Length: 282
Ligand SMILES: Nc1ncnc2c1ncn2[C@@H]1O[C@H](COP(=O)(O)OP(=O)(O)OP(=O)(O)O)[C@@H](O)[C@H]1O
Ligand SMILES: [Mg+2]
Image 1: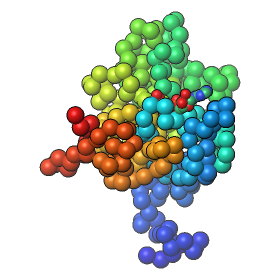
Image 2 (image 1 turned 45 degrees about the horizontal axis):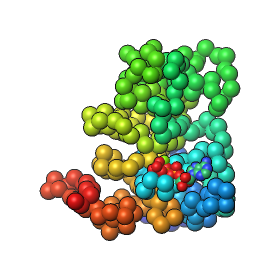
Image 3 (image 1 turned 180 degrees about the vertical axis):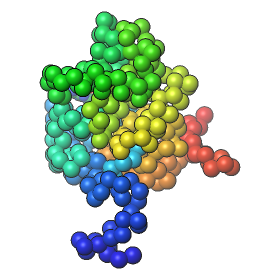
Image 4 (image 1 turned 120 degrees about the horizontal axis):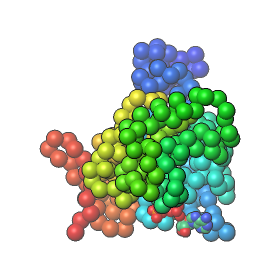
């Protein structure tokens, strides 16, 4: 393999040798989706986690794991520029994290609880456009974009109903549709499977995997159970002993590491057909 013009022998000069996602979208795709250096976060002087030193490559589906209160949502809020780092630097899509970045779509934790009684699904998806990120837009493309986002998550059938009357799975589809408006390059979802039954969990995972296949989008998904995503995940951020790390799936899905992480005995099982899953030892 010949070195490229930059002299970096790890970057092939022949596009045919590049991974498909990079070859299709040019060298820009090689910029990490997220880059932390010596990053820490604190509230009122109390450090939640520190020494965040990792890059998340663009283009993957990455899960964020850690026990309750370890700082997963805090990490998400840091990436969205909603809170500043106490130390270090936080870059998202090649630039310092900043609030209201239109290149990021966000599905917050407990989305269902946060929505008003009267609002309809369609209103909420439209807010992805006219809400805090862009200010009011007057062009007529907004309704078409709302329709496209609702179609992408197959929510047209119930989008006119009040959110309070929708099921958890339907609400989650609306939440994803709102985050898709504006065609973000990074989609961040905080526990999108919480409170869903197994069937709805499966449907939301299928939806996210399909969307990731169709769009050049990086997905960061906070989960408390890796299993529904294990077949699709490209890397894992884990919060261990007060520090966030990024690792390959094969390194993180490890009984010893997960047992330490969650403070309870976890088994990693690989079936004869190659499927991988984890299970708490009883
Ligand atoms: N705005 C805030 N002010 C003060 N402390 C906060 C604030 N937000 C979070 N914390 C604290 O930071 C820690 C991490 O909280 P965070 O919500 O990020 O955890 P989490 O990993 O998302 O937990 P869960 O799995 O329960 O969602 C907790 O101790 C929490 O009390
Ligand atoms: Mg959380």
